[in-house]
Length: 121
Image (spheres, rainbow, N blue to C red):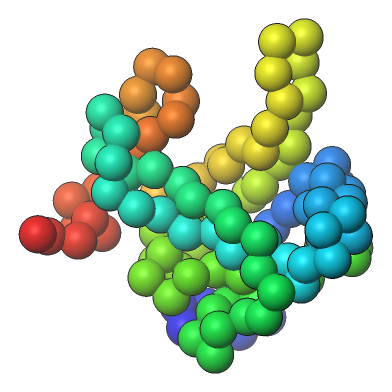
């Protein structure tokens, strides 16, 4: 929907693709749908959910056995994002390196986009 011919909407590191493929295999799912919603102290939060069937308007990104579906309303917010999977002594999880984010809360759970991208209520 918001793509550039020959360029994927989002990319995954090898670790992220491996983890997503593992989650798909364990649950028998078709992939993970990523999106954004209003919430958190910075204004927006990422969402992730298992998907058994992509919606017709989802942007589908496949890499190394992993499949991500980008919800239609999130495509403009996520374009150019790199998804990584990091493991540390205290936590593990997906990390989004999103060039569209202008600010984030201290805990890193919520984000703020440029006013031109943020939907108005």
